[in-house]
Amino acid sequence: MEILVEVGDKAQKGQVLCIIEAMKLMNEIEAYQSGTIVEILVEDGKAVSVGTPLFVIEP
Image (cartoon, rainbow, N blue to C red; front, side, top):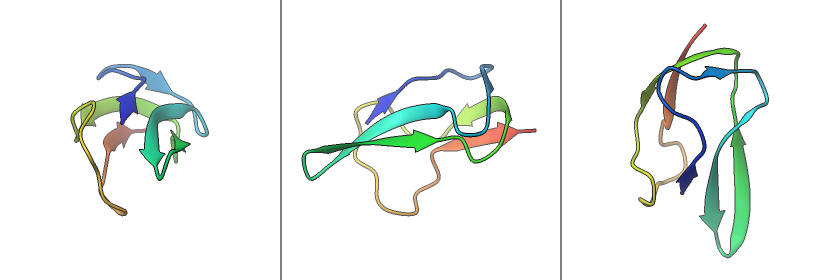
């Protein structure tokens, strides 16, 4: 997993926040809403499972 944003960054709905590799494919994870990144819940380079929350975005 490669995180492309930092806490405090402004994100727009649809903006790519991170890239996750799954079965040799790179998947872009987009913001579900516009707002400010208030917390990153995972570490860069760590494995994640389906359904794991990755970011907290405050509108």
